[in-house]
Amino acid sequence: MGDFPEIPLDPSSAALAVFRENYGFVPRLFRAQGSLPRLVEAEAALANSILYHDTAFSRIEKESRVLAEAAACGNAYCAALQWQTLLLLGVPPEQLTRLTNGDPPSTSAPTIDECLAGAWANFTCTLATGLGVAPDFAPPPLPSRIQSTAVTREFYTSNVSIDAAAFTFFREQFGFVPNLFRAQAARPDVVEAEAGMIASLLLPEDGLTRRQKELVMLVACAWDRNEYGVAFWSEVLRRAGIPHETCDQIAAGHLVGPDEPLLDFAAKLAARVPEFGEADILSLREHRYTDCQILEAIAVTALAKFMNTLQIGLGVALDFPPRPVVWPSAEKIADLPAEQPRPTGEWVPADPDLETLNAVRSGNVDAFEQLIERHSRRVYRTLVGILGDPEDARDAMQDTFLKAFQHLDNFQGRSKFSTWLVSIATNTGLQRLRERKPLESLDEGASEAEETFRPRQIRAWTDDPEQLYSQAERRQLIESSVMKLPAKYRVAVVLRDLELLSTEDAAAALGLEVPTLKSRLLRGRLMLREALAPHFTRRTSEVAN
Amino acid sequence: MISCADFMAEIGNYLEGDTATEVRLQLEQHLAHCLTCQVVVDSSRKTIQIVTDSGSFDLPDRVLKPIASEIMNRIRKEQGQI
Image (cartoon, rainbow over all chains, first blue to last red):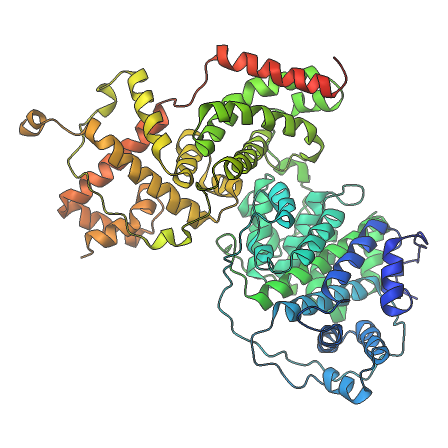
C-alpha cells in the first residue's frame, strides 16, 4: 500500500466530498495523509481552485498539463491518476499517449493556469514519492525522462494593487506580500487557497515547529536550485533570528544541528527522487520523528516544489537580493564532519517584551499596559507619519493597541514584538488613510525610481546647523516640514529616520519592495533638504569668512 | 568622469554607504571637483542628522498616559472586567 498507514478521514470531511466529486473516489495519495486532516482539507481547497473548474483553461486542458508533467517527472502514481481522470473526462487514449510522450512541446510562455497546473503536478508528485503510495490504477507506459522545454520569460512585475483581501494573510504572516503571490493577483481564489495551505501546513506547531518547517523549505529550495526560494526563506528565517550566514551554510548543504536528519530527508525528496524510499522514512522514525512530523516534512517539501515550479513558470522576480549560495551536492553531505548538536533556540535573539507578553497571555490583562507604555511613542510616530495628522494618529494608536491585544495569539515571536506592533500600526494607518484621504495614496507613481530629482537649493549649509535654533524650534521646523511631504515619502522618512527601522524592515512594514522604499526615502530626504535649506544655509558674512 | 545627473542617480546609495567600492571611487572623484554635488551631499547628511536628532512627533507623558488608560479601559470592558 505504501510507507504510511492509512488513517481514515472523518467521513463528513469536506475534502473527501471534493475528491469524490472530482475523481469518483478518494485517491490513496490523500487517504495516506489521514493523520493530518487540516492538510488534506487545504489540499482539496488548493486543487479545487487550481484544477477542478474551467477558468481561462478548461479542466481537461489543466488535467492534461498535470499528466504531461507527471510523465516528465516519471511519477507512476500521478501519471496513473491523471490518465484515469482524463479517460473519464472523455479524452481518447491516443491523445493521452501523446501527452505522456511529451509532445507537442510548448514554445510560448505559459499562462498562469498552465503554471498552476504544473505546480500542482510537482506538488502531488513529491507527495506521492514521499508517501510511497501505490498507484490507484495500473500506470500507463512512461517514456524515459523527458526534457522540458525551457521558455525564457521576462521577470514578472505586477501593476495590480496589493490591497486585495487575499493578500492580508501574507502581510500578517510575513510582513509583506511576496512577489510570487502578487504575480497571481488575477486569481485571488487561488491565492486564497495557497494562503490556506500555508496556514494549515506551516503555521501549526503541533507536529514540527514552524521554524523547522521553514528550514525544510529553505533546504528543499536550495536542492531544487531555486534562487527565489532560497532568498525568500533566508529572509523569513533571518527575521526569525537566524542569521543569513547560518542560512547560507544550511542551504549549501552543511547540515549541522539537531535537525540534520530532517533536512537531509527533505533534500533527498526534493532533488534525489530515484534514491528516495522507505528507508528514509524508517531513518526519520529511528530519529524519533513521529509519523505526523514526517508527513509534514513531506508536504512542506512538496509545497516548496509547488512554489518553485510556479515561480519559474511565471518568471517571478526575487523579493530580496539573491543569497551567495554554493548549491549543495550529495558529496557534501557524505563529507560532513560528525554532527555538532546546536539547539535551534540558540539562534533566536531574546525579545525584551517576551516576559510581559507571557504574563498577558496567561491572563494578566493589566500587564498589557506596560507594553503600551513601552511602545506608544513608536506607534504614534509611525501613525503620524502615515496619516499626517496628530489627532487622527492618536485615535489610530488606540485601534492599533486594541488590535494587537485581540490578535496576541497571532504573534509567534518570529519578529520582535515592537516590529510586529509597527506593522499593525502601519496597516491601521494605511487603512485610515484610504478611508479618509482617498486622494493621498501611497501606491501611485510606480515609476518614481526613474524620475531624476534636481536639487534647487545649492548654497552651502552652515557647519553646525543644530546650533542655530533651540531644540523646540528645530523640532517644530522638522515636524511642519515632514507634515508637508506627500504621504508616501513622509512615511518612508518617518520609519527610517525617526523610527530608525532598517530599510528592509521599513519596506516590509509597508508591503513595499526594498528598491521602492529606498527610492521614496531618498525623495523624501531630498524634499526635506529643500524645505530646510533656507533655515540652515550660511549667511553671506559666513561665506566671506 | 561621471556627470552630476549620474551622481544624483546614485546619491541615495551613497548616503546609505551602500555602493560598491568601484562606484564609490567614481562618485568621490566627481565630488572632488563638483561644488554643487558637495553641497547636496553635505546638506543631505545634515538633514538626516537633524531629523533623527529632532525627537519629532514625540508625545509627552501627560498626553500618553490618558490614552494608555483609555486603551486599557476598552480592553477590560471587552474582557468583561468592567
